[in-house]
Image 1 (cartoon, one colour):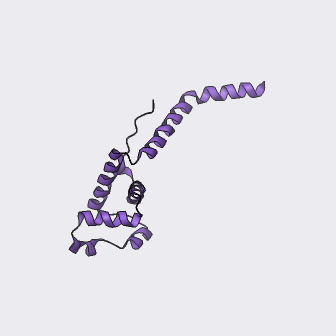
Image 2 (cartoon, rainbow, N blue to C red):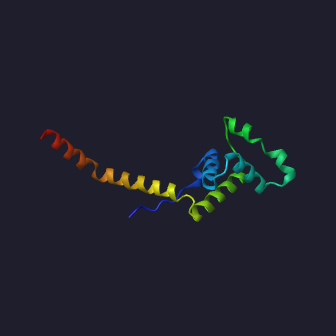
Amino acid sequence: MLPDIVPNFRTMTDEDLVGLIAYCEQWAPKKVYNTAFSQVFPEKQLKEVKLPFIEWSTKDDLKLPPIVREELIRAAEINFESGKMNKLKFYAQFRELISLTVRKWGFWIFILLVIFWWL
C-alpha cells in the first residue's frame, strides 16, 4: 500500500550525512566525523588531513574529502539496510502517499468543500 522509498544518499550534503548517521547510531556528530576519518586514513595521515570537528562544523563550506564522504554513504546504506531508518522511511512513505492523494483528489475535495460551504 505504501510506495517503496529508496533514499539517494549521494545528493545529501556532507553535514546531512554526518547528522543522519549520528541519528541512526545514536552518537554525537563529532564521533561520527572522527570515526569516518579514522576508518579511511592511517593514524599518521589523520593529523594532516583532518580538521578538528569544531573548526569543520563552523566553516562556510562543509566539504569532506571524497573518500570520507564515500565512507559516510557506505555507513548510511548499512544503517538503511539494517532497519535503523525505518521511522524516517515510514515518514517519507506517508508523505508520498498524502502527496499522491492530494494531487489525485485535491480538486474534487475542494469542489465538495465549496458546495458544502454554499449550502
